[in-house]
Length: 356
Image (cartoon, rainbow, N blue to C red; front, top):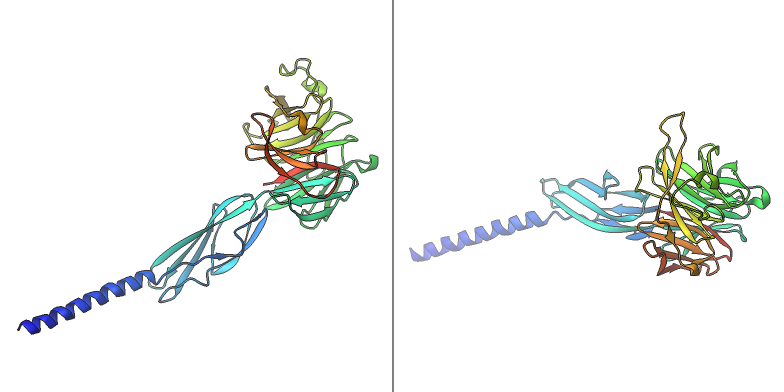
């Protein structure tokens, strides 16, 4: 009787272990394995994704991919383009035929692109965040001096303001191929910078050194909508006998703190960077207004001459022309942080646009 009970106990133990092991196998047999072609790159970054290495004992019924807050896609493989700089978690969720689910994620870093022009070589360069040239485009018009990168409905375009040997032009080109998409006569005679404000309806802003004016331009047809000269800002209490638009050194747009964002204009004579609030028109009978804000940023004299600047996240980036560098600036101090991009071609760098 004792022997029989012993064998019954052994049998039960073996059966229990089989059940436990079978359960473990069942749980662990569903495994999501995401794979992508690149974990880091420059905007716009297109990657291939593949889940074919994923496993499930009874087969996989569903593959669901999420790309940060960009999109949700179903399928075992494909391609996806990140149109903006940032850090993205790509998540793969698989569902097995038996209903079990597994999820795995990987991180992709998309870095901004830095666009600069050289007015002597008549070329435009796309640089990585480390300063490596990844694309060279021929400027459609000679003496390019201002750049602005714009996005509409997921499609990027590059605006270029060129002196053109006295025949100033504004062109819109495809940043991938360099093909001219549109060409307009630009206001003024000596371009000093270009910016694009993406907040609807979207505007190109151009500052001219000779006329000393800021121009608001409709990017769809090249029409000048409004003009802002030095006299427009004379009544501002924040100037008080301080020159503004006397020697304009560039213009850039930055998101916030106001709803349409802000324009930043450099006065090279005083080496001060001014913030202008964009006050959008209320109706068809009113016009856009610009309101100069207090406390301009005093930039370090060692940076000058500056031939272009733009913002990325919390930092200002300026083209220090004589140094042939793109230098990161702490706006709280106006001094360089130590981060620079250098080694790119040319000797007369003009304009800066950061694709982000």
